[in-house]
Length: 378
Image 1 (cartoon, rainbow, N blue to C red):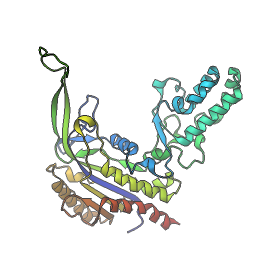
Image 2: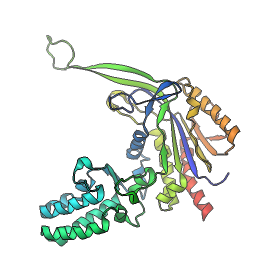
Image 3: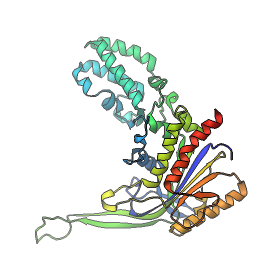
Image 4: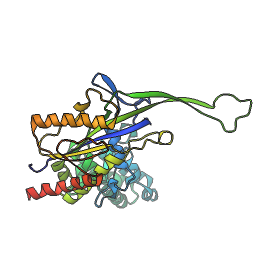
């Protein structure tokens, strides 16, 4: 097989009586597929839980993984903080206003008009240092501050990339993995090498409306009924999920650091298998682990295995794995793309061309891919 360009990660994960991802009406997100409605978990939901997980394999535990913050208030809360309270208020406000416009665009002074923007620690540190420098040089004179900030804006206006020129991870590890789009400054955009599909149930939706009450512990005997009556939706399902990692793209975003890329892939495999995209923790305990993890490394365009479930299958791991294996076998016969495969499965069903192993084995396989890629181009 040629050196891998893509790592594909397929997973099956079971959940019972949960509400993993809600829409604007508070109901489970859904997807029509194969003439039936499926329960869905959005890619945004999955990525958020993976990147913020408090876990032994959390991304922030990786050595060299700079932090990043996705917010509309990063300048207010991270760039200008306690240090600014001791400076002249008018000077600080003038400099803050200019920086808000540089970072968030011309309407950046209005928080409601700002884009929820991802900024890395290196960018935040640069802005903070520049703000402190400008405040110091203004020496309490608001007129001088405006002159200084005018010169500063000429250099930085519409060029957020200048804030972190030469930095290894300008938008932190989060930006390096999941990308960044800044509508006001395309030069600062980062292409995402990790592509995440919406997960969906391999069978028709299984949902019910849960009626529940809150009882008053101090109610008098003459009081009847419940203190609070509510309804919520609960769903059960076996979800198919799909993730693709563009390996050369990941290496580019990590400045060619194969060791860091390997550590990222190692932890990402663990996070996908072990971190649940759960809401309503206190009332549903929506914790689960993947019943199947299938990794494929290859040099051809990736392809989802979602088509294996266009005809809904029974909500049972063994039958879902069998449907996936059958579809994969037919793809192999037609295309013969020759991916290198590893599988961890709780079902006693073989997967074509896949070497079985534990989750640790699969994570180790993923860790070694960036190194093999850089070795072949050295």
